[in-house]
Length: 84
Image 1 (cartoon, rainbow, N blue to C red):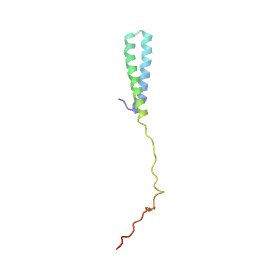
Image 2 (image 1 turned 45 degrees about the horizontal axis):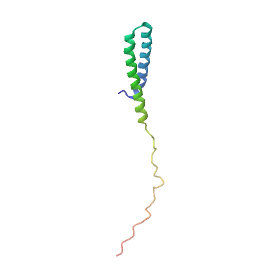
Image 3 (image 1 turned 90 degrees about the vertical axis):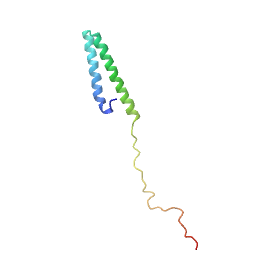
Image 4 (image 1 turned 120 degrees about the horizontal axis):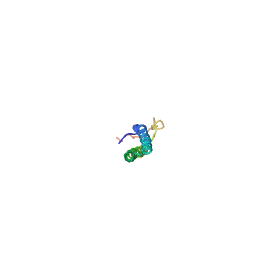
């Protein structure tokens, strides 16, 4: 499966395949059209898969925890000396 970084190249490939399908239609190459349609369908399926995986694997920035409000505080219960 191609990674999301390869998505732009895959978009170019699909567009090129569509251009080649149009050319094959113009020239009457029915067998070529059928083969190219299979290829463009596979490229579009890979694009959908990339988009689905990218949507599922998003990163949510939660920020850094801030402990400044608790720094320097002491416990509410302090140790008491043991009786002799």
